[in-house]
Length: 540
Image 1: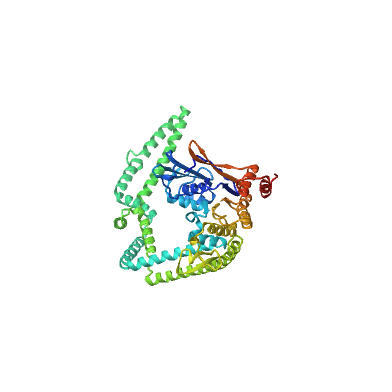
Image 2 (image 1 turned 90 degrees about the vertical axis):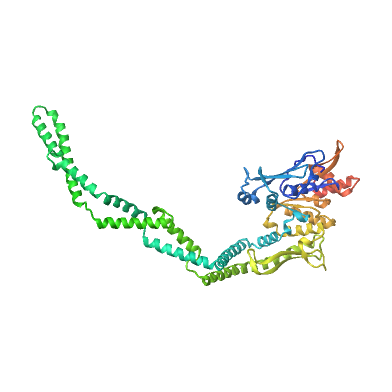
């Protein structure tokens, strides 16, 4: 590793990295690949250093839902990814300060960055990404989600059928037991309100004799005995009445006693009424006790308390519904067929939409290829029918490419030349730039084997793509570099006996010098500089 330390902050738009061959321009791609989960060994650690540490901060917009699902959200709208590799080749990875696996790093990277030119980093080579790109291009995202939902419903019912067929006897026995339980608890007609009233009535009936005796004693003490309370109050009141003529202040006391007499008399009337209505009915006691016994017996039978009998009934009904209630195998087979038909209907609409989108995208990418030194080449979105279908629909989506006329179309992943693959990827990204799925695109080897007019077209295409994405490109071509919104130069020097790479952002004057170097080679003349300034559109 020839980098000791470098900190880069890339802006929006189209950025190029330029420099002499061997200066280390590809280190950026290698570093991003490693921080996003590529395998790394001890060779990446600079000689004499204990470890290599790579950090990258991204706008978390494209990754927000994934971070939430994995409990990895940060303090703001950014996502900080870090990887540390020690001298022994062991590594640790972090997202927003929390430890993660390399698989999680790679998964996060799929939302953040696409590297074109190296097969292992390019999402366009993955079948799922190709399908998602086609659906996004055709505006079929909602339709694809509906198909996936219909597929899940169909599979869930099918699994229930398989389970029922496999365990038919056991389920039949369980259904029979549950049906009996539901009938028995329904027949009990239990309610928490009735239970409260029943317990209160039982307490009253069970202590009826005590109630009779207690109220009789109270009545005698209050109004019926020789020394009843009412008679005593009357005597007190009469005695004080005679004393009023001697001291009027007793009037207040007499009034209180009179009030007490009235209250006591009312209590006596109420006691007599209560005694007349109090009844010891042995038959009713038996009825209440039988009802209590029935409730307690059901509660014990179904391992519940009387208060939770309604919950036990609800659970039994829910499980019965889960088993299909009274549905037999034939009824469930009908439901499976209906669910599959619903899936086929949704998937058929998606297939029709994909057919139109595939035709349009194929033509658009093929046209773009003709301007990128791929004349005679073609691009095709192949839709291969799947006999049974799956959650993604009734067809497999695959990108096929013929780089030159007369060459049979092959899967995009089989394109051998890094330069061809990078330019084909550029054509695809340019054709689909309105539906940006990944916010950052990096192109390496895009200028391999081209120059002149084609190089200028590539530069213009990358610049246009930069209006929709953050685009970075490693290039040796001045035409491509001159089209960029910003430019970084990679240089290599020797310091303390060690080779070190440096990366610097260039201003307009420095860009003129660098593009003049790219144009003129070893000897840079004023004419070359003037040409470079003209390409950049700046004053010389």
